[in-house]
Structure formats: C-alpha cells, structure tokens
Image 1: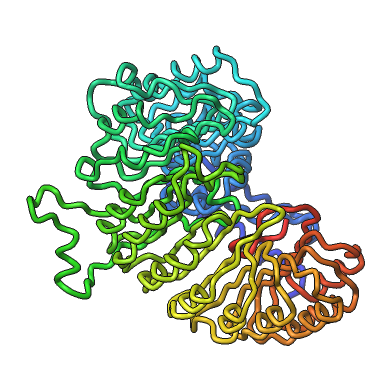
Image 2: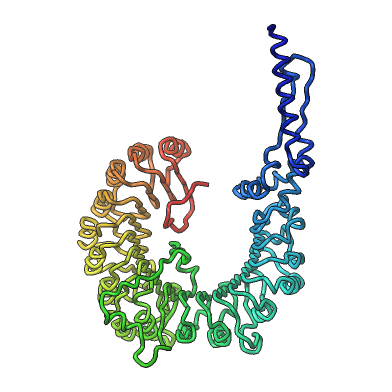
Length: 608
C-alpha cells in the first residue's frame, strides 16, 4: 500500500471514531460543548493544515468533579476560568462551594460579586475605600462572616457609618462574625448588637467604641463567644471597665475577651466573674504592646489542657468545696498590661494552673517609660508589689508554655527575689521572654540565680532577653550549660554583650535560631570577626539575625561557610554594600537587609 493511501486510511479511521464518540454523549453535554467538539477533516494531506479532534473533557465530566478541581485553584485563576467559554461560565457560576469565601481585593473580583452574592458565606473587603460594598452587603443573603478594612488615612463620614448599620440589618439573620477595622470611625456597639442578634464574634478596631453601657445594649443575652474592642491609642475615650459590666453580663458564653482599656483603669481584670463565664479561655488587655517585639503564640493553636494531674490533691484544687456549681474551668491565655494588686492574679493562676498555656504580664507603671515616682498615688510601693508577688511562689503552672514579663529598672528586687521561684513552678515552659525598661542612664541586670533557674527549665526551646544588662558569671554558665532542648536564643538591645558572651553563644551547637542585636562598646572588630568565624562553622544553625554593628567583605566570607544557614537577616549595618548582598544571596537561600529599626522576628520571615 502506498504512503498516501495509508495516511488517508488513518484519517478516515480517526474521523469515524470521533463521530462515534460524539453520538454517545448525553444531549445536555453535547449542547454545552458543541463549540469545542468540532471535527474538521480536510482532503489536503498536509500535516500543518490537518485539524485534530477537539473534545472539552472538563465539561463532559460530572459537575461535582469539575467543581472539586476548580476549588483547588486560587481566586484569580477561577475568575479566568469563567472567561473560557459560555459553558464554563454557566457551570462555574452554579458550582456550590467555590464562591463561599471571597476576598474582594481587586477589580476583577469586585465586578464578579453581583453574580455570586447569593453563594458567598464569608466576605473580606480589605480596601473598602477603593471597592465600596457596604451599601450592597444586604445582597449577600447567606453571609455569615464579614470583615471590613479601610486605610488609616481615609476619613469616614457619618453617612458611611449610617450605611453600615443599614446594610447590617439586611444580613442580621445569618451574620455570626463581624470584624471592622475603621481606625478613623466611631462605632456604636449597642446599635450593632441590637440589629445582629446572631453574632458570636465581634472585633472592632476603630477610633472610638461607644454605646456599650446598660442604657444602650439590648435587654436579652447575646450569643457572643468572642469580643475584641480596640479603640485607638490616642482616643480620649477608651474602654472603661465601669461601663463594661453590662456587656459582660449579656455574654454568658464568652470564651475570648480582648480590650484596649483606659491607661489609668486597672480594674478590668476584676470585672470577670469566672463563675458567670465558665467558658472563658482568654483574657487579653493591650495585645499590641505584647506584640511590639515578638508575636505571641496563635491562640487558635492552643492545645487542649492536659488532664494528667500528678496527684488527687492537685485535681481537688480546681474544685471549690462549697458546691459543684462553682467549678472554675480556668484560662488558657492571660495577658494583663496593668495591675496594682497581685491578689486577683494569684486567684486566676491558682484556678488555671492546669489549663494556662500563655501568660504575659506588665505591672501598672510599666506601660510607658514614664518617670513617675513610686510615691505617686497611682503607683504601688515597691514593698507592696514584692509582698504580693510572694503569693505566686506556691502556684505551679503545669501546662504553661509561653511566659513573657516586662519589668522596669526600678524593680530589680523582683528579678532577684521572686522570678527564680516563679520559673521553677513552670515545668512545661517552652518560651521565656524577659524584657526590661530602662533610661539612658540606667539599665537592669539579671541576677545569677535567674540564670540558674533558666538552666533548669528542661523543656525550654526559646529564650529571649530584651534590653537587659548581661553581665557576670551567670550568663556565661548558662551559655555553657543551656537547657537541653534550647533551639532559639535572642539578645535584643542588650548591653554588656562582651566577646566571652559572643563566643559561648556561637559555640552552642544545639541552636537553630540565633539573634544578636547590639554589642558592648568594648568589643573590637577582630573579636566580631572571630564570632562570625565560629558561626560559619556551626553545624545546625538555620536562621541568623545580626545587627547594630558594622559589616565588611571578610564577614561575608565567614558567614557563607555555614552550610546549614537558610535565612540571614541583617539590620542597621554600616558599610554593607550592594555587592556584598549579591554575594551573600548567591550562597544563602534567604538574605534580608533591613536598613531601619524594627522589632526582630520571632519566626524566620520570608523575603519580599
């Protein structure tokens, strides 16, 4: 058989099979993909002009499988799929599930919303000023979660706030979660709760929160389990605890409470009656301050508290002897930015000693670097503070994993007398953050007995010192004999970091994460070079953060010798050139240079 006859025979066979496949398709599928299932056969024997069989297999497959595949694609790709053809568009717009979560952060998504509004369950609008949707929220008839954000410099009018209240009334029967980040707006909490009676979670990051007292709130109890009220730092009318009682009374199922309170109002902790709120697991005030240097653990990742009590006596401590109705379940997270008395703290810690996992504390006069004398009527005396802290020596926090405490320089006696005993009562501690406030003429040093207590924390993985004076033999002994599981060591703005400290720090082979920001003035250039030379030979270091010093080309040669290093962060370094950065990036996966000052990272960041 000749070559031409053989080719014509194969073409005829292909055409016959394609037409047979077309006849087996269902009528609906055949109509949907008619424009994609064309078979063009031409008598010309040229391969360039021969049309092959084209069949849209996605439209032919069951709709459930098609939607499942599309659901794995990012939002911008889903929008592009709608533009493929009419068949895809009709199928995708009626696919259940793929339009439930929408983040309207671009024009394409914004234009799509009218077509899918009846399917959206969670709507996030990060740029309301660019893509105004408030007046159309009531079109989302199945909306359950709504998040609104406006840029800080955008001035919000009263008309726009009124539109928000009106739009919320249209979704009040389904809305359960509401987050508003309008830093220039004044929002009425009472008006929102009166309209949206199904809310279980509300978060307001605004200029001022008003109408949260008894006269403005609904008379019936709410379904709220999470309340976060964060007025601006500069607002004259911040959250007042005396007006907050009525709101808490209406929230019997409260689990999470976060507040930015008046700086002179230290009674918020005493408002919580744990017998009225047995489900409360997190009490937080001024979380922005605690996150100033390091991110606290994600509260959604808190583990269930252990129920393996070491003795029946410890278990009985959680139960009141008067009545079974007075059982206190205990907190999992406690972050207090101000308190005069430790009595309330002692009561909470004693009740939560088997459940508490995150504890962050700032006494009342530590929130700012004010020079307010101890004799001030708003500040407790040193003797009163110290005597109260003795109450905590007998409380063992069995499941505490994160402990952060900030103490001013005027409270050195606390560091020497009470902190070591408290640390020994935290057998499961994994992260310890010690932060000091100091003036230009005075810094706080850490007593040797604290270093001894830290070395006995056998589960400690992360140790962070912020603005302390690290001197004496205690720090050297700690670095020579660190806790066995220690993997992260951070020195941020600490003074007296001499070469013996640097040398022992670099020789800790168990470290995976090392941050060193700032040196002692007596450290020479050659000693810094020796320190980096030891870092270059480190067998396990994967993250190194270095700053507040100088840099030279020989330093780069030393660093790139560390084969395990994946991330290098350089801060405020003089003499660091672009050529040096290019050289470093050829050998290290992530190299980040930060010319200005900002807080160090608690976890390795991703490069921009």
